[in-house]
Image 1 (cartoon, rainbow, N blue to C red):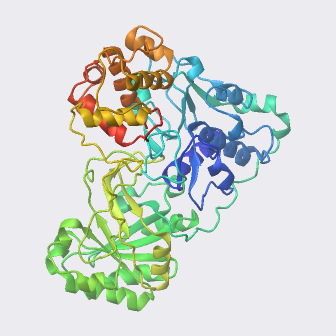
Image 2 (image 1 turned 180 degrees about the vertical axis):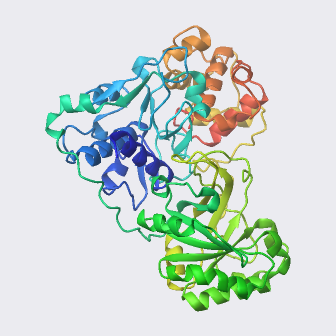
Image 3 (image 1 turned 60 degrees about the vertical axis):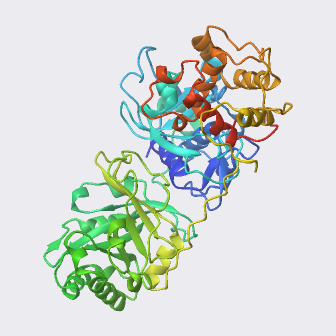
Amino acid sequence: MSVGSVTAEIARRICDVEPVGYSQGEDRRSWFAAADAHGRVSSPQSADCSSLAAGSISYGLHHTYGVPWGHKALLEPNDFWTGNLRAGMEARGFEEVNWPDENLTPDGGFQIGDIVLSAGNEGGVGHVIVIVENGYDPLESEAWIAETGDIYGAPGDQTGQETRTARYSEHPYTQRGAWTSCHRFSEGKFFQQWPEFAKGKPASKPAAPAVSSAPAHAHGIDISSHQGGLNIAAIWADFVIVKVTEGTGYENPFWRAQAEATLTAGKRLGLYHFANDEDPSEQARYFLDRAKAYAGRATFWLDWEASAVGLGPGPALTFLNQVAAETGSTPGFYTYQNVLSSYDWSAVAARYPLWVAGGPDYSDYGRAYSDPPVPTVPYWGGGALIHQYTEDGYLPGYSKRLDLDRLRDRSAWDRMIGGGKVTVSAPAASPAPTAVDGQKRLDEDGEMGPATIARLQQVMGTPIDGELDDDGSPAIEAFQRFLNSAIGAASQEQLNGAAALDVDGIAGPATWRCFQFLVLAWHKDYVPADWSFTDWIDGDPGEGTIRALQRALNNSRANSGRLW
């Protein structure tokens, strides 16, 4: 345990596991006030980028050296923002890492727990991230943007991306060269500054609290002998599902060690059998002879793919019924989306929850946890309890690919262990096609027509007539003022050779370059995937740029005077 490892652990938990969204309002530190000693949050909360960094560092200092909560040696999130975070860190043991201007990474690469700043008062954009793994292109965790695309959002992560973990090289600020400094904790410097804690290191990390069964989603992994060297305690996962057996002749040689490591780490444990086309009762017996000892401590799952599929639903039901009868639990059923459409699974769905594999990025994902839409499935009216959305995920602490899974309801998992009936609520219906403020949603057709102009006027709080005056429009003036407030002088100098746009009401190339730049920085998903930086930021209000504007207007509030 070190300050860096705990800092990264807490930042990753808040961004990927806990129900924490983005807000720069008065509730920007609510996650810190609500979290328990291990960073677990039981209700929707908010963070912004600096409160996440400051609070995570505070956890690191508290758990590593026993610094009491409320002590001045901790970084109280309310007191820090990106403009003064450097000074705050330097007063608490952090040192700046040498970082040549021409390089995208500091000398020697990043280390877990590094804090990377893009300070507005140093030529950056006002942002900070926490590095959560070692290397030259690590993962980083951050509080990114509210569900509205603005800086003010409701508690909780409504989009799955308000707080997030992303690859450093893919970050828009990396691609723009917008980071201004990297800071790393030095124990020696901290002890010089705060000598009273030099002998105050706890003997060991406090034991993890009992796992909550609150009805909330959770992230986890499923593993087999291929992950025999995995350090489960070091992996971010609420649950781990371990392969025990296959057919009637194969047993994962690592499964017992994997199962015990999961329970010891305070994570939920699942055990699964990979079926083949042998007799299902004999397969169930082979599995139960090994896994039954974990009844009451684990969920049990039947993996139905490959040669087993051709047997149809009846043998699968035989296996599940046998496991249920002998363990007193409610086992679950795993398969792929296409298998569900090939047979009538109603008898299985009536008794047993579903764990489904599939999604658009299933075999080409390459990132950490996320919250993709749960696939629509037949027979299971409430949908799948668990969604395995990729076989190509990566997590800090392990260099190889992992299957990543999202559990929709922790309490349903716990009911499975006790043999209770498991029902899953149906996914929420898609919202009506309206803008964020209830206004009729613009068609994102790439045309700067009267409807788009009228919506721009409405958002900017100017008279609405659907027309722009060639001599200067109040709506464009307001648009330019917003862009000047959102983009720093250094960035504007690079874009247009001036520290700010002229507020003249005429949307010329300089105005459009600023808008294009802002979209690339805040909402890269608005940009066509095959466009490069120079393709996008060209000052030309073409079809792609106008579509991005229309999308931004749909995500902006009337009379706000700003986008998002």
